[in-house]
Length: 226
Image (cartoon, rainbow, N blue to C red; front, top):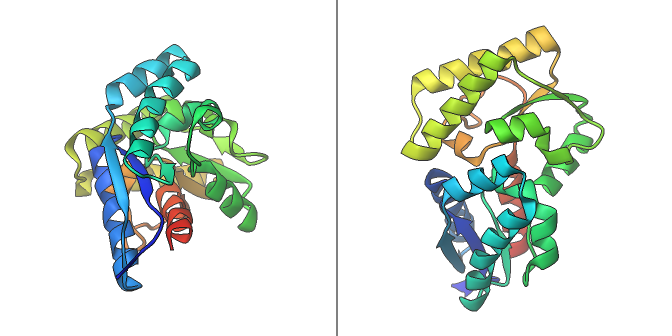
């Protein structure tokens, strides 16, 4: 079996998302008779949240850069971070990185433009929802959930992050909020802007128009690998 290029993955942000990426990447390679070449480091979520809360982009970039340097030393040829909140410092990280970084926002921006989406709501951590995707959404209008809705989305996401598994109750709550945002606020689609949301939503059980950042990111990474 032939190997492709070596991917470096900054894992742990959270563990469920890392496993999801690993499984999807391995399966894509198996389907083409190829062998996945990957190295993974394990970062911690708590420092990431602390840097974001403090508004310290340079500090977060320095923290993540330490993992990119380890990935390079292990043979990675390019890197990806399977989480959105760490992308708070993506510009600073790309500038300092010794390797190409496949960021999560470029394929999202392309998909928004291709589908002519104009109004979206965002599901993810509070930092991502309040930041309007850190300004990467371009001309797309970001509709914010109410304070109570945002609490539910954020707390559900943290539970997914910590436990690595979702429940039917969580799926039902977020689905209800998604339909409310569509009906009440005129959202064209929901941006699933948290890779651990893949523990709840898939193509078979998502009943609202959506853009899955993790799925789009994975498609881009797979194209680079294969």
